[in-house]
Image (cartoon, rainbow, N blue to C red; front, side):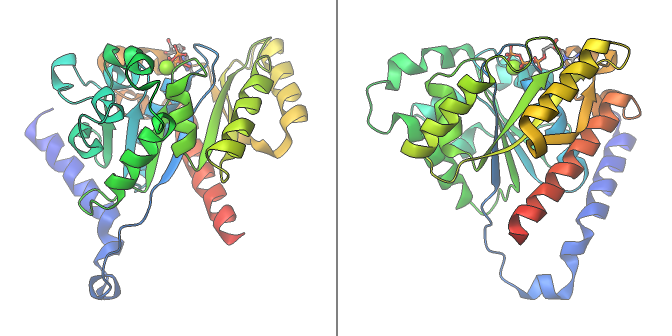
Length: 296
Ligand SMILES: Nc1ncnc2c1ncn2[C@@H]1O[C@H](COP(=O)(O)OP(=O)(O)OP(=O)(O)O)[C@@H](O)[C@H]1O
Ligand SMILES: [Mg+2]
């Protein structure tokens, strides 16, 4: 990035932050507001969890939210997809969940203003061995986020947790820490398969670890309008899951799949493509749903 484009980013940043500069906001003490924590989970592999974490995170940041992505997958795809190379992952989510470091130390900035990430490394695959016998093993992420909330220098409004394709201790940590779950479902024949298992896990986390946990919504991904099967899947999922399914459907789009190899969210790689537009619409829909939830 050359210096001019950097200035442009900072100017944009200032512009969207300007409402905070009102006299009323200056006079009021700024209390740390707890972020909304959304776990992006589905034990099925390759359904678009990481793509959604990266691009929903970017879209939320672009419309003024301050976002932290917590990479809880040992594969580290969210970290790589945001251009965080292995050498920059000095402190990772493994260090945080094993209690070696506070979450604050793992948080690093990205090229996108207001978007941060706590990266992961392969070490995380050994988490179960490391903390599996500890009494607070399911609450490591929740405790780390609570400690982060009190650090007023990082006032995140959204935390998106990218889960691994498994219902293991890592995913349970994400569910125990989350306000709600966001489930990506790929538009393919077996889309609904495995969903009941996921819902059972959510239910058991609700009864044992986190009574307030809800399903925020289901996002259909990799939709191909030329394919009859895709249309059938959308109709089936809407029929079974009703209002839980977001109106926004993410299309299959080659720009979305190319972007991670450049270490960029698709919104940075190609803002005008249909994939970017869809993730911006999803972000707007999620904020709208949050407003409705708050209004009761
Ligand atoms: N809308 C899309 N259009 C085209 N390709 C996509 C789209 N969404 C995801 N992909 C591609 O599909 C593959 C799987 O996506 P992704 O890595 O986000 O899934 P995942 O659920 O995180 O996978 P895992 O379970 O392995 O963590 C990736 O190669 C990604 O680039
Ligand atoms: Mg993934």
